[in-house]
Amino acid sequence: MDTQTDVQSQVAEVGQVHAAQPAWIPTGPPVIHCKHVYKRFYENAEPGDDVVRRGWLKQRKREVTAVHDVTFDVSKGEVLGILGANGSGKSTLIRLISTLLFPDEGVVEVFGLDVVKHPHEIRRRINRVSVEASFFKKLSAMENLMFAGRLYGLQPAEIRKRAGAILERLGFTQSKMTASLENMSRGQQQKVSIARAFMTSPELLLLDEPTTGLDPKSRRDVQDFVEEIIVERQTTIILTTHDMPEAERLCDRVAILDGGRLVALDTPEALKRLAGPNVKTFEDVFFAFVGKDWKEVMADEDPA
Ligand SMILES: Nc1ncnc2c1ncn2[C@@H]1O[C@H](COP(=O)(O)OP(=O)(O)O)[C@@H](O)[C@H]1O
Ligand SMILES: [Mg+2]
Image: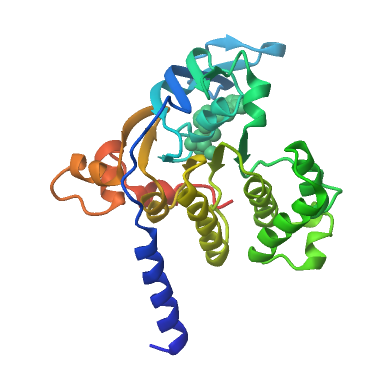
């Protein structure tokens, strides 16, 4: 083994030890309260589908229940991971919590406020990272972050300092920070979205696949950012991911979604215990609750 690889494996080992989180003890009222939540969408029907609705111009529509009777609470300072295949409802659930969608049935409360009645107040206190992040594409990363930071009440000098430090850590050169976003790859735009979320100190951070599609070094950096926030235990975090070790390492509890339903929710250790005597890895846990092989599920995903 060469020296470089040796050092890398040592770094990885140190990271593992440092990663062990103390057991989470919930206190106070929940930051997120979801009770019997449903969200349905209507998609264009394929031949053979049950048509439930005819849309504009009489298109045939079929119903998709993206979130199906989901009930759970999240405590202040807790890190909740959400695992599930593509289309299992992770992003829809995150969008319901971030007030971008309203539930069709059930209750979603954030900070004790109903998402339907108080969306603006909730939005000021949360931040979301997602691959579909919206930016002004003609502006640069720094200009976009200036704008976003001002909305969150930060001073320009502070924004420049914090955003610059995060982007630099994620591999942005000074010239890339000031170049227009329109020619940047999805991964690079995702890093800008990450900087936007991590430069503010929201009470609730919603991370929708923050590390999917990133190079290994950037993925590690993002995981480190999350860990730094966790240490302070002031921010509640929901994290969806395809990376099992990431979920196990960062999350106090992990929820598994399958076809919009919550099929499991507990600490990583408890999920392993519940899943059965021969369960060793999180892939085994996934198989026990969903009945599908994680690697096959991931192989079916779009490479995008
Ligand atoms: N805006 C939408 N319009 C129609 N269908 C949608 C919409 N958003 C999500 N869906 C459908 O809801 C289901 C759950 O999607 P999503 O929450 O994005 O899953 P995930 O994030 O786990 O991949 C999928 O079947 C998806 O096609
Ligand atoms: Mg998604």
